[in-house]
Image: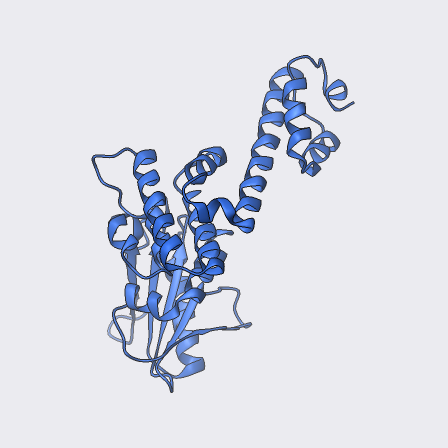
Length: 285
């Protein structure tokens, strides 16, 4: 799974390890611990690994995917075997597909092969969960740790994408404002914001969707910093795109100069100067 979505899923799992296990694997009365696994002998890295029981009796390996992979099934097999080898307990592997674009024909939930018929074989199975098939309403009613995943859930058919997401964000913000602590609400809102980027391509659409959703969000220093960062990146794209149409492709030095600018007021001034400048040099003067 590509960043920043891998870090976001891991952060949510850290908020409520037992909640993640209960939602994706089934209710458990045993202790649940988030493992910090380092299997340096391989390059494959599991996203989240939960130890179930104290002492440990089994492991849940949750691997989230935002994009398609032709070899992910082999990665899951390798990590499952290595976890079993290191900890000596049964390992249940689960691939969480975050969006339909993460589908791949090889993602069947099985790895099977036999090099010599009747002389041994490999037969490995893992679970595949398609997040977009789970109703967003169910995720909104789940634990606080998994509720932000509702932005990737199945929306009501009567609503379009943006209206459906707006309703989910509003309900999520209201719930977090009433049930979560300040720091926790901040953390979960940021997670929902990042994950929404998987459904809405334009950063400004995501920003507008979340702006004003709740008092907690408007007062969150972290969230406001993320909104500002998104605005900066969007202005970078606008300047480079519109400048390319007027002056041709920017050279590397100009591009780096623009992307190094973090002041929103200055960047907005550049978008206005694009209307009157006749070259990149004049624009940046």
